[in-house]
Amino acid sequence: MKELENSLLLRNLSRTRWTAGVESTRAVWVSYKGIVDVLKELSQSSQEETLTRSKAHGLLTKILRFDFIFSTMFKNIIWKTKVMTEQMQAEPLNILDALVILEGTISSLKTVMKNEEEMTELIQAADAYAKKNDVDAEREFFQIS
Image (tube, rainbow, N blue to C red; front, side, top):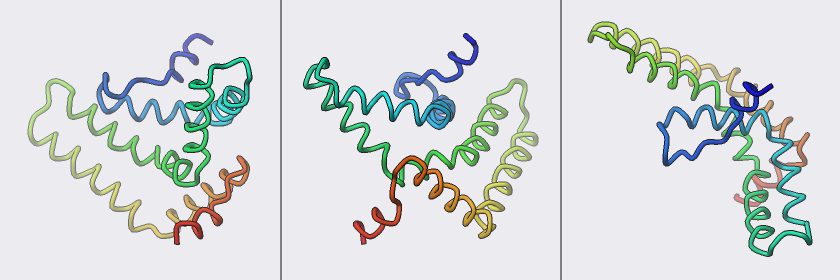
């Protein structure tokens, strides 16, 4: 249980390597519903200070947006670059191995970008997840247009 808790800890990105961002994204994704519930409770609690309620409400407003949900769904793509970064930092690594790692990652990312069906499925999955969490992607889209 302790290992699971440690894997879901949010990290301060300004104090850690950028690859910790992938882990933080995963933590938010796995805990999204719980985070929303806690922020709602904090923002509405009369027992909390005004500043706490205000910050909780502001954060809640940001994460209850389709663009936030859609961005977190890109975690699998981000994961590919994290793996590449970790491999590039491994010792010993020669230039030929580094080129193979880079070419493999670039090829993998190009495949994702070219696969329209996969992108459509990703957007549809994000929309379904958003609806499940009372986020209306279509309404947000027309507000921007």
